[in-house]
Amino acid sequence: MSEQDKRLMMEIPVIDFNELNGDKRSETMALLHHACEKWGFFQVVNHGVDGELMEKVKGLFNIHYDKCMKGSFYESETAKRLMESGGVTSGADWETTFFICHRPTSNIDEFTALSKEFCEAMDEYIKQVIKLAEKLSELMCENLGLEKSYLMSAFSGSAGPSVGTKLAKYPQCPQPEFVRGLREHTDAGGIILLLQDDQVPGLEFFKDEQWVQIPPSKNNTLFVNTGDQVEVLSNGRYKSTLHRVMAGKDGSRLSIATFYNPAGDAIISPAPKLLYPNHYCFQDYLKLYATTKFADKGPRFESMKKIAKVV
Image 1 (cartoon, rainbow, N blue to C red):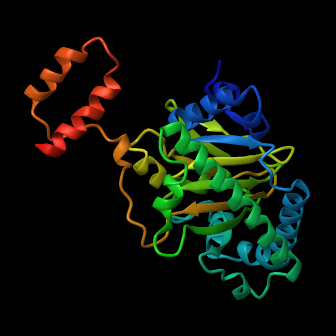
Image 2: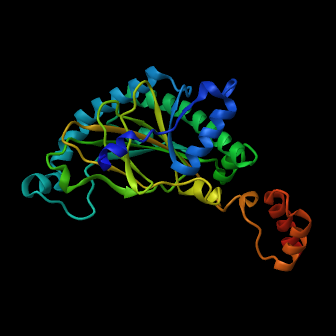
């Protein structure tokens, strides 16, 4: 079996929100925990974001791209260099993009080329996506044994979590072997919710020493990944995973990624409950171990945290 076939066979976890309210809740929560621990990305279905609204946002963004972005991209130095000489300058990505801030303050009115219809649709879409991000943060906290509002509070800073959306198109590329759509990276922030193309592939995540191809999103599926700050807050339990976008010859790929991030002034550190005990005397540990050797080690570690504070 080729490496490419292996990548295509890897099944990405799918979290069905409908199953959180029934007999399969425990199973679904366990799957979410596994996805965050071992994958750093997953798909979400029955998530509560209106499907017609999702399609409307994608359609209006495609119209905006054709009208205002496509021509200028192919006239850019990056595009000309690739098409004329078969090479690009190091550090270039084959994408055209802009970023809208939503919370704590929106700047969508600054993009005067965006239609009123698009802005209104985007505002409603973001309201629904924020609710989903907040729900996901609560579920993650539950799985980690934290208060359900812990992540939201940690992200809040002085004005609440920061929310913004990167709207990107990865145009059809005549020579994709010479350039990436977007180079390999992890995301700096918190929870990323992606509304992506339902036809054109290109997104890849790195897992188990190989690149996993993320299929186009069908049937109103949203794709979610966790960023660097979730890895830090979870003390490494949940992962921020390396990913990239491949350029392609077979169409232009749409990507609308909403970032549910900490506020700029939020102070980030691992949740104390998830830290191992530290700065304790080994002799103290041995004393406790003598009476708890055949019990679970978790409560023993929690006890050592209290002993370490006294020391």
